[in-house]
Image (cartoon, rainbow, N blue to C red):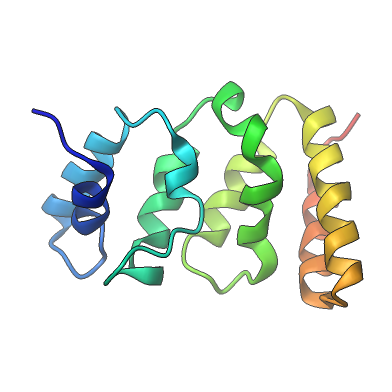
Length: 133
């Protein structure tokens, strides 16, 4: 059975039953374009899907995540956002620490340029908690 991204987003909304959310997470494993799950603003869902999107991303391989690291790091702009802790935990397990270090430095430039001190602090905490080469 083929499901499109809109249907999956509807299913992973936290207002649905756990069973429907889990089914949506399972179906998301077949979606190749993971960027759809990075801080999505889906009509009618918004942050209601972020926790489950973080779970979906956490289940992806390093190879799948690396091209999107700078976008994924936007998630930790606010550690109160749904899924932020899941994202940090997954990034701590990333084997390609060189690319993670590069992405963190790029995001630090953005955070500095916008005087986003909280994001800078969160990026610094991540950098301190990861064995970067």
